[in-house]
Length: 501
Image (cartoon, rainbow, N blue to C red; front, side):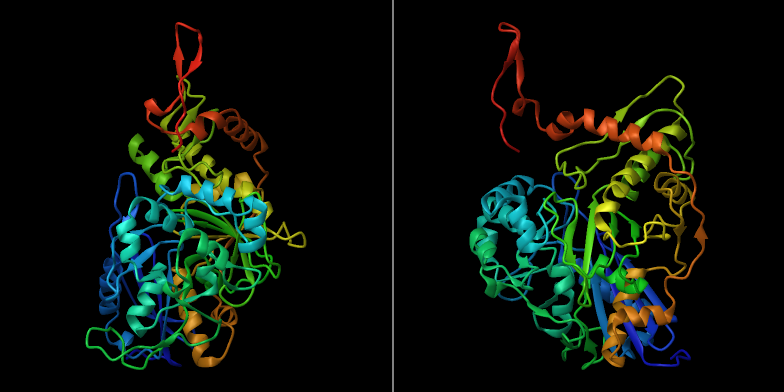
């Protein structure tokens, strides 16, 4: 065992593409061991993963941590949000999990909003207006398109719930992650019976919601588990709520996270209810709220543009007037689930580097456009913007965020903030502290502050103008030509019937 001052805890981040595990000294926050293993995600129309891959990746990541993992006194799982995990009576997956970025349920999302009170009714009841990412829409899609799979389902879980249950043998979730399902009422902090009844989901199939600070269970007695029997298991939470814990966020501090998806969020004392649907009214993992806006396209989309151009991701160049909306997977903010990427303003003298910079600008524009809606009126809008996630250390990302936000930017030195937040939650079980206080004691948010620069209003206005002008095209998206109106040359007008997605 390494020289640790206090007990050891394990924090896990099971993300879209990999699972990471950290063994952390609960007293000092020192990372004494780490491990990581990948998963695969399907391509094509949907985005799916076999949940058993997550378990195998967790076991491999913990194996890399060595003996330290077995010596841990507590563990917590942070995980990708929204994913629909359907289990049979034996606890085995009925089918691969539908992930957060699977947008096939966009038609179901639209119908659910219309049928259950409209945007205002949904915002008041659940805190959010569900889009295609929300779990409730995925269940509606499954029931409509794969009814046999829906009938075979005896338990419904989120990704972090699935791993926690493999450890404890008990079906549990937490308020942070369950608030992203669409079937949890944020006003009453309970499952919403009307929504569940409407989508035909028996509440008996859902996990128990564990309160902040409560023990979800202990590691059960089984030879194949990577922890010692009796190890405490914390509630766990969704990845954004875990990162908020990992930063030790206080209310009003803004965060911009650059990962496969992009998010902006802040802790708030006030329950969010945005009827526009831009801000999701999520709960956090320790009793407050986490208003959040998310884009589907962030680092992965920009890296794809760089690859298409044959450029390094840092090869962005200033100048030019080209606009690129990098909606390669549809988009959530703005709500354009069927959109594809759009390029405007290409000239003979446009360089590859300028085109790459336009991809950065398009991704950041979407996030900053939602930031003001995320922050409370009393938030300090001149405070440094905390920049986290896989892209946060990239110079091109940093400079783009500074230029388009006009704010100082702080880049925490701590890495793997989701796993660190999960570790802080596990440590809180042992010490009785609020996990955010644990993270502040660990000083996880420390890092250099980049000074503010003048805000690039010209670029922001240009992107907003293209987005507005192209709205009909983006909303039409990539539907097959047979689904679109066609021009009848004999009549000189539009004819044909537009079918729904």
